[in-house]
Image (cartoon, rainbow, N blue to C red; front, side, top):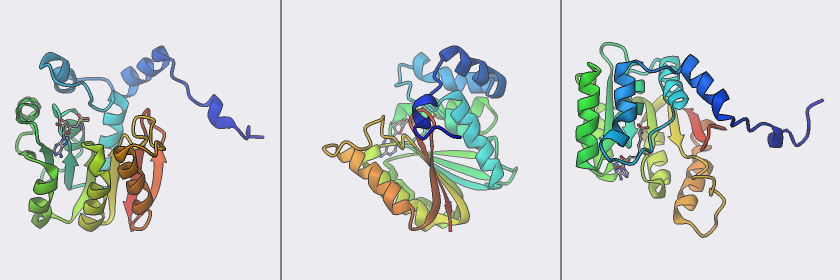
Length: 218
Ligand SMILES: C[S@@+](CC[C@H](N)C(=O)[O-])C[C@H]1O[C@@H](n2cnc3c(N)ncnc32)[C@H](O)[C@@H]1O
């Protein structure tokens, strides 16, 4: 019989175990390594998704047959590279980034991977850029990984611009473990994303290190 409090025993965080699995299932080729290591090399914040989460993004994009995708928050292009590799030849990813340096580093990494024609790195604040992308929609997948204070806004945009059956993915869905902090505006926005998403999506919060909200648009 399952332990009623089984959650307590299910946080296997042994680094050797996780590295063994990352190496096995989410190993690097030169382009992935270049993009993953770019934040450290370029004195940028190393806040990209983990290796296995990157791999998961690409596999999920393949599962829904994504041809048109939007990413909010590019950084150095590691998650974008994983997503773009899942695209068919006529597919496209628009990824939005408001730091000019991050956008330039990401463009170089995506070009080195031979993906510059399949990915557009759009420089600007997602709040103003996203409406300009709407004529390209509806989209098959939206990945949100930027300013948490606007996660509710990005979730509403995704609900309006994904096709039925399209996939919403949002990283940091635990808000760095502080999702239930009632004094944090960021936590409140991420909670609103969780609550509101259920009106438009079949949802689950996948227990990745900081939570990944997954929703399939109804
Ligand atoms: C967590 S990082 C993205 C990591 C990336 N998705 C990856 O896993 O490789 C968040 C990025 O979003 C950018 N960002 C934050 N707020 C933004 C906004 N309002 N519009 C566009 N980009 C934003 C930051 O400059 C940063 O590069």
